[in-house]
Length: 157
Image 1 (cartoon, one colour):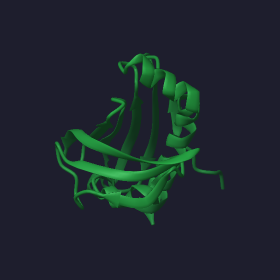
Image 2: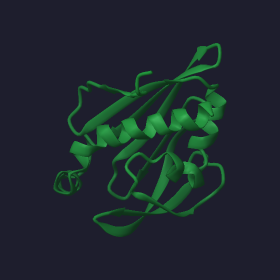
Image 3: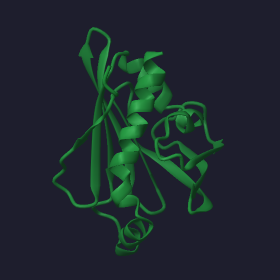
Image 4: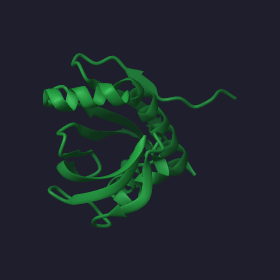
């Protein structure tokens, strides 16, 4: 049996990454995990999120949630949900203005295509410098692919 992998997609914008996977679960099941910030560390492929997460149990447009993270040094970040379409799309952003999106497409028969998008193409020059300095831009596609594989494992269990 082959190892499950997510597809890293070609993107047209600089400082942007996108990854896609098919999950054998309804969009509502997947979205429930994505909309619960306390579950994010369960499928975080970067292993940068710690268990210290605060915010509502279910996100909504305008909701704020924060999490303790560690990329070389520990820090805490507060995110704001900037797009929310039940069972279809959720996007959040933080102080540095890059965003993370999950787009869900119901393929029928309990199958859902999930695309995760990291978008930093319109951020400040300082934010872009920071992303490059930490190596996050180079690592993001691999981390995102791991996240989607973990999300698939959880949702199909």
